[in-house]
Structure formats: C-alpha cells, structure tokens
Amino acid sequence: MEKQATRDAYGQALVELGRQYDNVVVMDADLSKSTKTANFAGVFPERFFNAGIAEQNMMGMAAGLSTTGKVVYASSFAIFATGRAFEQVRNSIAYPRLNVKICASHAGITVGEDGGSHQSVEDIALMRSMPNMCVLVPADGIATREAIFQAYKWQGPVYVRLGRPAVPVIHNNTDNIKIGRGITLRKGRQASIIACGIMVSKALEAAERLAAEGIEVAVIDMFSIKPIDEELIIQQAQDTGAILTVEEHSITGGLGSAVCEVTSRYCPVPVLRMGIDDQFGQSGKPDELLEHYELTVGHIVQNIYKLLQIKQG
Image 1 (tube, rainbow, N blue to C red):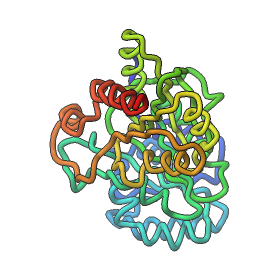
Image 2: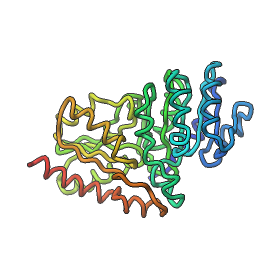
Image 3: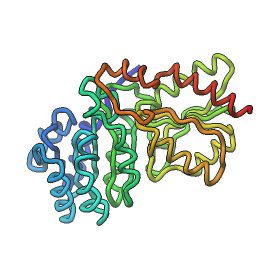
Image 4: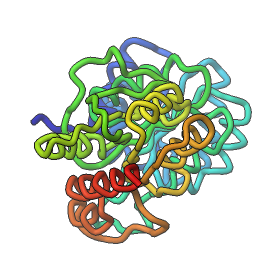
C-alpha cells in the first residue's frame, strides 16, 4: 500500500496552492525542513517568512499580515504552535477571526525519540476549545491536500494537525472530504469505530480482522473535529448502538470527548475511547510507543470485543 507522511503532502499542497493564489503567504518558526514549508520557500521566496525560534511572534506577524488580505499558513511543531503560542493564537487570531491557517506537524506520540516534551497530545483539545477555530485532522496525503485547499476558502482560523511518519493512503477520491463532515469508509451494524489521523488506517485494518470473525463494524474517518459531523455520529449511534473512538491524542478533550458530547446530548449509547489516557509521551520508536500506549490494530480489536460485551449488557 502506498504511504506518505501528511507533513510531506502539506509541503506539496502549499506549492500547488501558491501557484493558484498569489495572496498565500507561508511562515515558519525555523523548522521549515521538518514541516516541509521549505518546499514553498524554494518556489516563492518572496512570500515566505522565517520568524526564527519565536512562535509567539510568528503568530502575531501572521495575524498582522492577514489583515492586509493575505491568507497566511503558519507552521511549527504542534507542541509549539498550540502550546507555546496559545495566547497569541487566542487573542490575535481566533478572537478577531482572522484568516490564519495553523498547520502543525509532528503531532502525537509518533514523533518518536524526541520524547514527551515534543509529543503534543493536547493540541486538539486546546484548539477545539477556542471559539472561532476550525480543527481538521487528515488521515492521509489525499485528505491533507483537501484540508489545505479547503482551509484557504474557510473564512477564519483553521488548525490542521499533521504527522511525522508515513501513513497508508486510504482515500481514492475527495468527494466526501469536507469541513464539517465525517467520511464513512466502511459500513457495519454491530459497532462503529470513529477515528482520526493516523489511527484511521489502523481502524480499517481492525475492521478487516473483525469481519473475518463475523463481526461487522463501521469505520468513520472524522476528518473534521470542529465543526464535527453531529448528524453522522447520531446516525452511527442509532444504527449500531455502540461507538469506539480512536485517536493519537489524549482522550481528554480530543475526538473521544467531542463524540461523547454529541451522543450524551442526542443519542446516548456505550462509547469507549482509545487514546493517551492522562499521560505524557516518552522517548521511543513510533511503533513501540503505539504498542506501549495500546494504540495498535490488536488493541482496537480487543476494545471492540469489550464494547460489544457492554452493549449486550
């Protein structure tokens, strides 16, 4: 299966976007080779600005540029873009609802050996809690390109969460990849898996294993965390009666919390949340860390078994 890191797809999409729209400006905080904004800098040096290791300043500069009609894509590692610069993002970008697109790479524990200090497992929660902020978590390179182009047309700030490792390309068309929508990748009647980011491909693999045992589960790629597809979540709750959420993020405030907010209000059903359970990350190889934090295909299968037992009472 073809693989591509979402950060690589971001770098490619930026160049394509820059060719179509001359008001696109890109900024980085001295990490352009890692975030792949260097691709844009190489083609459009006059529209690229390196703010240095000064993420807070970068967000303020991005806000100012956006008031002149520019659409600014500001990048850094997720831990810095959302954590270090939170106040600037809140007060200078989200509060006035400016056209700044924060595209943060190296999110989650699959950053690997850099360890807990650089592994952002809180970024979705931080950005989702912010008024006016749109939050997108693409699962592959195809969805990443759509996120970047749709962010351009979205009026207001957008947070796009990107990863370091190569992940399987799972989408073969873009018709259903839209802000505010989830994507049904597989239908099932016994339970629903709602996943985002790198965990979507693992959810699909788990569904294949379960199908071989006669257990049919639906798989939803929740590309848009905010606005979230309430209608699809309610439909899955009604159709299958049980939901498993899977994310490479804290279960506090992330995708799982967002889904529970919908089900508890409109259609209460059993929901199990898979993610980082109130812990920081640590140094290790990405696959080792996914195993340690129980975010593998096998763990998804085990949690579906557990969920079905809860559903059956």
